Image: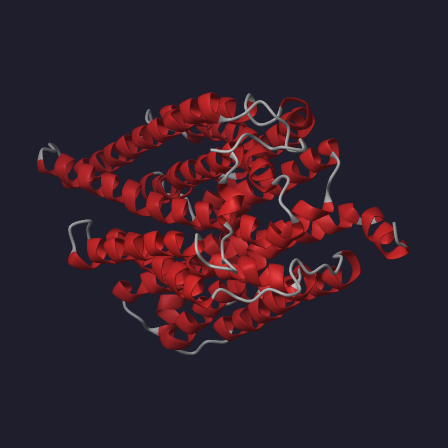
Length: 484
């Protein structure tokens, strides 16, 4: 082992801290701006109809470019990709925080998404090649999974605090000092390794994948603001699916594939990606619908809403660091992920019992704790298994698949569960009795309850799939799982 490699190995836990911070920074911007939107709208004078684009611009750029970002991190090397991604993300955040018009803010959010699509897979790829020992890898991914699961909740808390105590602009400015610290950390702790020295970028594959993901994410986002029957919604989804099918066909013939299909030949890896997809779909119900319930039904302030999610983060931390970190290296993902799915399902069922007059301690808190315990058993093992035994040249591409599964899951969950909640609420209002205010509150909570039942069902499906399809192997095994 060279002296340089030995130095980086000795600093691997500092590397984990750095990469977790990078991941948190990217995830924060999915939710941190949401709470700031009303004040940003007032300051920049844009309509409520345009407000959704502040969120959608980030999601579209981020989701559609993840596969490209992952491959670029393989081609450039993780260190260089992190340098470019952090610098670009900081500049985009500075532009957004300084925006004096709606257009500039949307452009800045899109640029954040572009550089976030480079950062997220580069950070996970760097982590996956840093830890080789089974027990250390389990601990590292437990911490990384904790950050991934808690990112949205922390974003709500941080967004509420910054908006209430400083300014909505600080929801964007906060990334500048974080990125500056991370840039120094990359120079000190991330080993410079390039995955492939003599390959070329798959341009046709990049166009097909980015185009396909763009239209899928756009269609799902459009369903939130319009309907599934809208021509722009289903038309975008059809175009996106067609482009992705063409992309898979092209990858089988390309000499330099953007997504080497050999990555997906492991059954455990493929099922782990499905588990992350289903978890991301269902998790939306916790972070969005429950936030709506706390603010609109129980009358919580944005900051108090963020604080209300802290028990979920603590439960997730306990589950990740105690169970996942200790057991994953010994048992593999099979007993952990299905158990986590069942716990998360139970958490969703507890949320279905909420009423317009429920109290936090007796009704909301138990569901948050049970759900958090479940997420801790799902995220770390699934992410570790999805990136285990990947060749360094494919680490970025495999990490991009993890992020893509999660992003598509979030987009689909947003569209599906929001549509279910709104549809059920509308129908309930048509048959409601009593005063208008009481009818609206009751119908709205009933809509949330049905969406939570759907979320519980998705977790139940995930429990069955992972129980029967995951292999009883550890993420450190020489052969991760038999081919599909």
